[in-house]
Amino acid sequence: MERNKFKNMSRGVYISLAVCMLIVAGIGIFASVRSVSNIMSENMESLDDLSVNGDIISEYIPPVMELPTVKEETPSIPEPHPVEPIVWVEPIEGEVQKRFSNGELMYSETMNDYRTHNGIDVSATDGSAVTSVADGYIKYVGMDPLWGRTVSVDHGNGIVTVYKNLAETLPEGIEAGAFVEEGGVLGAVASGALVEIGESSHLHFEVMADGVYVDPIEVLAIYE
Image 1: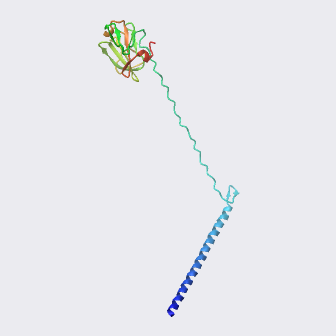
Image 2: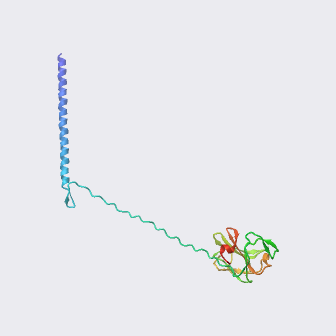
Image 3: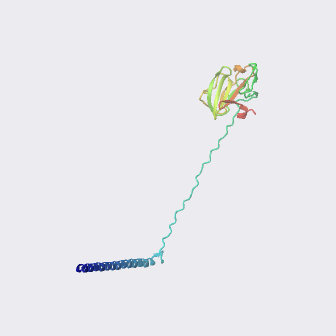
């Protein structure tokens, strides 16, 4: 009985201590909150006295920074250089006595038969100068058993001109790989082409575009 009484008294003491601790903790929390509130109030009062550019303001608003404007520059595009079209000149002065057959059969006075004619024949006297129709590089120099002395010039872009029935002796420097200017002399007219020896003296002139024979008059706009 006395033991139970003692136990009850001990429990009461613990409860009292716990209540006292709660009260003390509450007082501490209240004091902390009040202290923080006082600090914030003092800081707000100090903000009221801030001056910007000499003017007293109640609330400080930081200035807005202006970002630098970036000027967009349009890139300059260089204008393309104009490409001068090739102006072809006639390889020799004269009349066209035989035209391009374009794959059709034409009568040959020398051979006394019908055959294709892959170029044009321009009448001229023996020894007349034959010139390049445009700038280019000499592609071939040789003797054809049927067409006599032959010179071909590569003008680029797939265009090759061929000059046949020339005199055997050529001007100095006329050789494969040499550069020739428009109007540069390639040789002279002769009458050594066996396949056309029965016709009057002339230059046999051909044009090839990408390896195919074409009409010199239409493609080069000459002898029109």
